[in-house]
Image (cartoon, rainbow, N blue to C red):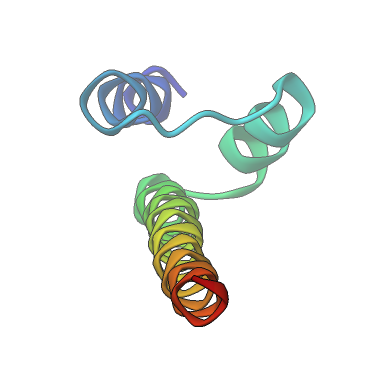
Amino acid sequence: MERKLEIYKRYREDHGVEFSQTERDKVLNSHDRTGVEVLIGKKMFRQKQEIAAIRIQSCWRMYKWRSWFNLIQ
């Protein structure tokens, strides 16, 4: 259990991956070390994917806004 908790703390400090208390207890109690790393990796990937999607949407909306603004000038 200590080793799995160390893995979780390392990912939290290095990569900013956070679990709620119930998620953390569920992951640490029901998986081995490899499973914990895989689930943390999935969560990290999802967070990066969400950030990328937000950036893409923001750029697209700004492009559309500027296009519209240039038409009315």
